Image (cartoon, rainbow over all chains, first blue to last red; front, side):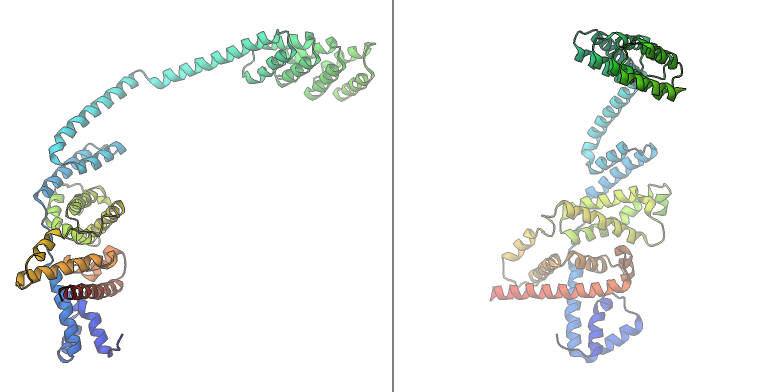
Length: 278
Length: 181
């Protein structure tokens, strides 16, 4: 790049400002003065001005007559949407779509839209009349109670199954039943007292301990102490009693101590439990 | 526009009458796509309605309009990256291609054609400031407001764009002459 004297550089920098009439008067005068005496800058200015003027001659397309029609259609539909005062997403999409329509199609599209709106409105109305949400909720409620009842029934029948593993499964179902009613508790207590299998009795005891908030369950557990013969169940029951801090059980535990067949280990354990409880 | 904002939609028609032509010019010179530009004019006016609450009233309506137009333009060039900057000079080329360039009218057309091509070769950034200042006759200050920058920055950019255009134009012109020889 050749080195220009300061004034020439300034001049070239200001040419566009000068051409677009954006140069303050004082600077314009000094620029024009400089051009008059500097042929290099004058040539530069001439070529830039030529280009600038040529740019002015570049054809700019005339808006087509359709433009106004389209604009008016767009404005009208927009006004409608505004007056409807429903600035929902649906309307916004509509307005956007409308903007793309040519007037010839507008009537057809408007017609189909009206149909759509009427359809939607009718659908909404019909649905609303039946208040579907309440009905569904009721249905779901009924269903869930039915499921609960089914589980209870299944549990009760499984408890009578000859296979010990099936009975174990039945006991484990009690955890899934939210509201255990009297029948279930009774069945569990019967299992606790009478089941042949020690494991089933132990699991039942565990399940019942979780339901110990129920007074009937507590009572049944206390009464069950003297009926147990397996040392495992005896000591487990004693543990549960300590955990529940059930004072009523002391009497029954003492009774158990009087039993001659009692395992020595269990004896020590029960004595410990009695001490803990009293 | 403040009236439109206040709910008087019919004044929008006035704005359309006054500005749809310059707006089309701006979009056309930026894209060289006539039909797309017409569509974009509609989009810009639609957005004016939709976003009328964003027009604050300080600053000129024109600046706001070009601001919207630039956004529409950006969306447009995002949509068809392939076709932008290609323009249809077929009709011009046909008229020029035939006879010798003796006729002054033909020569003028040729010059315009070259300028047209030079403009298309400019970067969008540079083309934009030139279009705004030359075709839309916006003052630097207004352009600065549209582009969210300072007047000084615009001044420099316009100057640089003009130099670039000149360079491209001369290259095309020289190429033409070389072809003829």
